[in-house]
Amino acid sequence: MNKLERTAILSTLANIFLSVIKLVAGLLFSSIALIADAMHSFTDIIGSLAVFFGIKFSTIKSKRFPYGLYKLENLISLFVSLLIFYAAFEIASDALVSLHAAKQITSILPSLVAFFSFIFVFVLAKYKEKIGKAENSPSMLAEAKHSLGDAASSLAVVAGVTLSFLGMPYFDPIVGFAVALLVFKSGAEILLDSVKVLLDASLDYATMRRIEELASKQKNVRVKEIIARNSGRFVFVELKLETNLKDLKAVSRLQKECEEKIKKEIPRIDRITIEIEYKKKPVLCYAVPLESNSLKSRIAQEFGLAKYFGLFKVDTKKRKLIEYNIIENPNWNAKHRRGILAAELLAGHNVDVLLNKGALHKGGAYYALQDSFIEIKNTKAKSFEELLKKYGGAGK
Image 1 (spheres, rainbow, N blue to C red):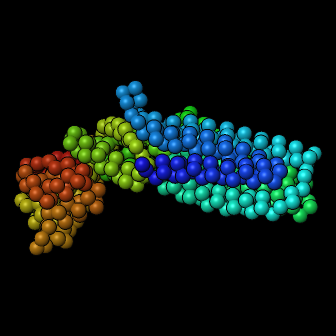
Image 2: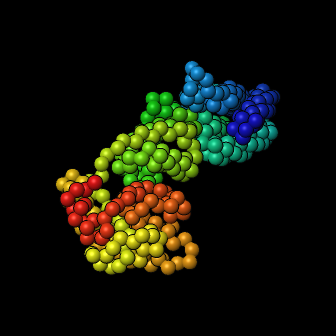
Image 3: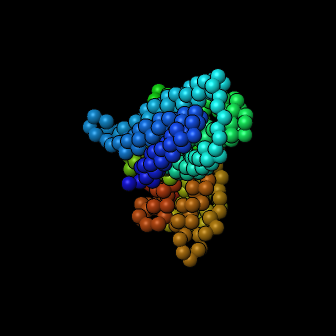
């Protein structure tokens, strides 16, 4: 049994206990407020049981319900909101009746019972709110709001019963009517939230923006469209991304990494559907290892031992060389991880394609380039100048 189920059962038992002691005290001392509050707690028992069964069965998946019964929790929240409306009507009705038939209470005991009820319900409401936020459960949060409404109602009962004992019975219906308005407001908020989820309304702006930011941080990716919705305490996300990657393994890895990063940041996401479309990048950045800092430099034989790297950008639409420059490789003589450090250097310059003299050994440097989604191609050119002439005429 998880935390939500235990809390729902605890809430049910607490409401049964409170209902009994308030009903007994109300009947013994002829307190209309306590009897009404006891009836109010009886309606809470129904709500707590509904929440328990909603949580218990909401994660069940089947062929008929492949996405689970997550929205069952929102249906329960909707049901609880109707109970809140009923409670508000009940409090208001009792308040109006009391204005015409106010009786003085002759014992302090009903006040003590009402005060105990207020403290008990308030502590329970805060506990349910804590569990609801931790588990991101809309039905438990709805129950917490409902319980806070009950606490306000109990506080009104404390005031009304105490003032009645002190010889001022008409304060009870006035305070009770004000509490009824607060309870009604709480129910309206829960009702609105539940209906929005049941109608598949989009997520809040802040969460949508965060998902977009996480996806956009992936190299060679542009977010084309994002659709997300709540379903119970879980979230379903559909992403459409554009990339210039052609290699299916690279695309698959990109998809997996994107999904993992988003789920890690936003754990309540149940499922992410990522659709990736290929789109040729308008400008590609190429890199080539060089032996010296010169246009006439020969292309280096060893990637990790290259003292310099030639970088150039090509307009893929106009098939035209845009710009070029040569950068120093500060780690060419490092004792360890030369290739990996060189790959990180190129990734930092947003290189798309590495043009290498021969096949790159599948070691640390190769996988570092793969992780940065830098495509590796062989070239037969002998110098940087020869390479620029070739790619200046064709942005391949």
